[in-house]
Length: 379
Ligand SMILES: [Zn+2]
Image (cartoon, rainbow, N blue to C red):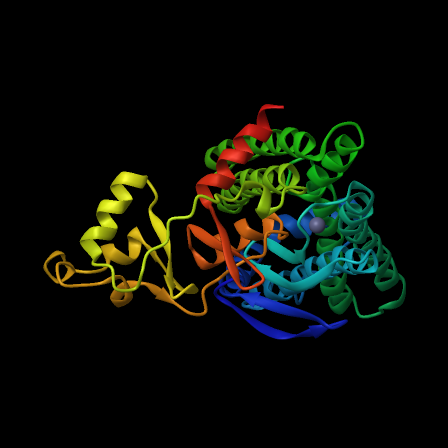
């Protein structure tokens, strides 16, 4: 994720801090600090413990306490993410990093298709950890009340732990809402995936997730709750992205590049003038060709490469002046189509030459893959 900084490693997992996180801490500190009268009353009522306000209500103390509560909350969020990650790693999934961003944490995992048997415990681990932290904070409130003798100090500690107890229980409940890709939505998907193909389970879970996102968005707008609006946005986008990713990977998992590549190869020579290449594109309807010099693949030329030249310069130019050169990304015919699609997305290219024993045997394009996907989606 861009805009984030690595701050350390825990259990060998890189922990990153997103810049939005630095904005949210002062915001939270201010929100918590300015509502302190309200929350002290609330916590006093819930725990049935009188809170001494001597220190709490002094000039800047509410905001300082707000900052401490906010930082502790994000530490709890981090422990929640860590729980997901450690369970995932125990089940053999590689964890790239944990990033703390504006509304919480995101663990980045290397996994193309989730296994419901792994996903269920993995998704539950986070909320259960939050519940555990909530219970721990609850207990600490009563420990402080019983053993701290100074009333003003006890007041501060009861307030802090009480607040954390409530927030962690809230995190537990909120994360368990079946709003995919939130934890509860993942639990739902894992449950559905035991009863139907994975991509269908994902689609249903993601539709429900988007329904929740719209609901959160409306509630957020009506109550001017900015955080809820941001969460709604991330859920909506995330649900759609993950659903299409899973569908693609699921439907294409057994398809190899060799099965779908075009073998009626049109190649061009490095000395071919550009206007001839354009003519060839018109007549073949292909928007890119491998460039072959004396039987050897030396590059690839696509419409985008030609577009980068000025119209006047183009007249005098040849293929070798604009083509993408070595190392040309190639794949063997045995490679999976999902691998090809991943490479195309990462390198922003539309076609990959297929090479076997140093010999160019075909080409696979993004359009080929999308056509296969469309055919597979029908049944
Ligand atoms: Zn979680």
